[in-house]
Length: 489
Image 1 (tube, rainbow, N blue to C red):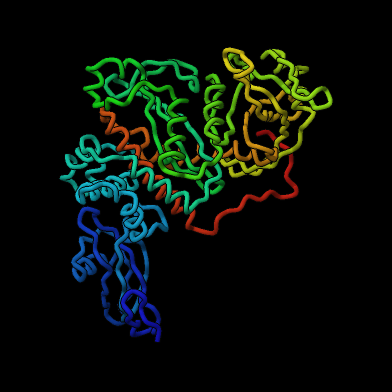
Image 2 (image 1 turned 45 degrees about the vertical axis):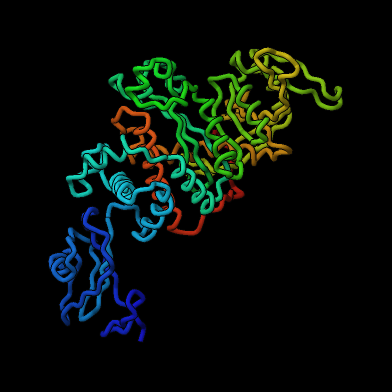
């Protein structure tokens, strides 16, 4: 006779394991341990009709449950389950994950508020206001949640570090993807808000600008670190610093430098094994970022625009034309149909098959590569870096590439570099489908600390969601059918 795995008690009728029924309960009233409930012979029930009886038998404040039918005399195991939590992410795993990542927070009551905050982000529909999160927790806790996020002095960096290490162990990321975040605002009092030109939007908006560092693989991506790019008006004015509680050591930082600091934190402080850094540098001078990453011996694949004056590239001649020589190419010539860069890229083109994470479709794109020198803004020879330039033709028949990527990967395979660059689409999709829905842009507080605390909680909720999805089946391995055609990227 098979014994119940939870309690070692056999089902007295079938002899098999006792069935498990999951019910939703208010998160502020638990946690509750699994309990056994015995039902009368030949009394068929489903979870909706049995809810009131289960509430009486278990003492739980049961709200509702899924339609799980059970019949006859049986021991039924009743297990807590918030039905709005991600599918297949068990309460035990949820608790274990948060216990690990929140362990650095010294006070147990603060860790409890952190758990309630993350539960609210996962459960509440619509905008994640403090009032909505508090209502999800049963009410009466809004002030405590507000205090935990905006005032409590717990350090978010150790929480992010443990989250990053956990994700690295369980997902084997192929790249660290830097993704900018623009949060539009109506007023002027939220920390870091300024009317400023945003390149990716192409216009002036009243907004906060942040930067997220994401661990990315073909299966999932998840943010593990955040930086808020503070304009000088917020760091140079003592009253504004005081009002937003900006720490003394925090200064003004453009987004690309925030990215460098985040990468340095990952490698130097968190001792994370480096992965290629993927980021978009089309709207800024790429040389300082590429030089610093190279000095730190960190691999990178960055998107650039050779037509911009701040991107000075020199295609290297082939060895037959003289080793170590290069011909300087101005931006207009480089992007024309007969330009030096276009010609060099065209001579070394091949179809590269890759998975478009925005659509889930396998594509094949014509990609060329050539070795180039990236000149420093000063133009001196000491400031030149020898790198690999990739050009991708988005449409058949196009005279020149539609996108360009620079990399310092040594002896790279063309397909590997391009597929690494395309992980930026994995991040784009996951931010839209997961983080934005979890309240990434919903923080209404005004303090620097509160912004970082909220972003950390959203990142934990995001990690729980994507890990739950990954648990639904074996990891998807990238594969391309032989019939794949060259198509637009």
